[in-house]
Length: 429
Image (cartoon, rainbow, N blue to C red; front, side, top):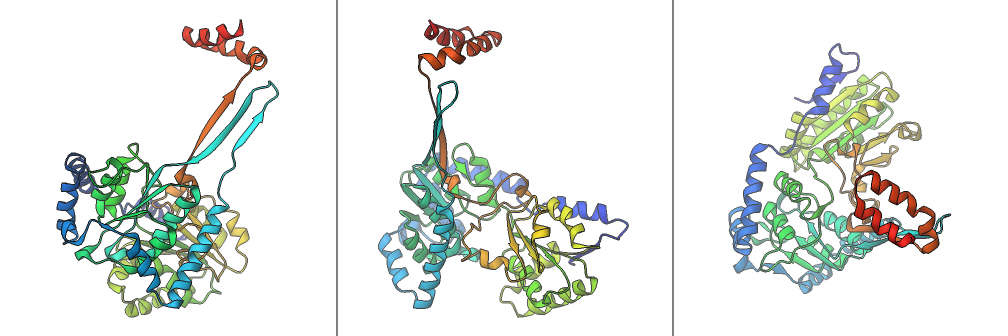
């Protein structure tokens, strides 16, 4: 049953705290399974990948082929209808333009002591992109991961994607063509992430792994961080909608279900200052669920993890919203700026009544790979910076070293590191 709360309830603080701290992510059993899979791939390489693909995706890599060539991707793009190709092009162009504006600038300057200082940005050599298959075969995910990597300047872009029963989503291949992907491998799951991290006989290792996946994929990324860089440990999708009673309840119900249909563990939460509107939205969700082709998944997510919370004012909702630190936040009011100013923690914010979260999944431009599970308190969505690293540089001459070097000598001696002190002192003479 969908949770219903009011800030006027006697036990509201306890009930809301339970909602905030509720876990919908991987458990001990998933962690143990992933540890074993990673160790197996590290030890057996391609043989392990073939075994896991036959077991989980029900097809033979040797029979169907391990990889998908560029020509097949180009053919998939060419075969699209004109309308669909135009939509994919529009999405790619907007994503590319937004992420090009994120590119950082190098710094190179000389300070008052005469020391040259700065930093230079460069891309990683190779990036691995996880693109979900099965229930979640999304070309939009490929564009959102591949385009920022290409904008950053990554030389080698590798996609891993499961192909259940050997079936490939042609839209994913078309998106790969559009984004300039270099390699596509027909593998998914934790074993695919392990292959990207360690490399196998066929697949060369990468430097960074990004992209959403199920609990096993997220856990594999968590365990392999340090062997490779990762974007984030992503959990189930989530949305928080802050809406007053002036909204069309049909719109708000659809917004809530747009996340519920992702997965049975997804979460959708409505905050409103109008109890009557809350009742209408709840009824409307039920009506819309009945018409959805994804109703089985969406119903379970809504009943198990959904919530409707009535507050005295929408301003009162904002501290609660910040505690949730949700992946997506809609502020469905006439003038959202006042509420937006109070937002401290959210993956991405959608302002006003005419900005549904779903448009951000496809064509708005900002990345839809966002922190979940309250991680927006300390992390951000995917960007070009996830595919880049900053290298600082320093240059002294005899005069600048003479100006500040003695302080370095003094600090090194204080820390009991005489060789450090000596390496500076010798140059001072």
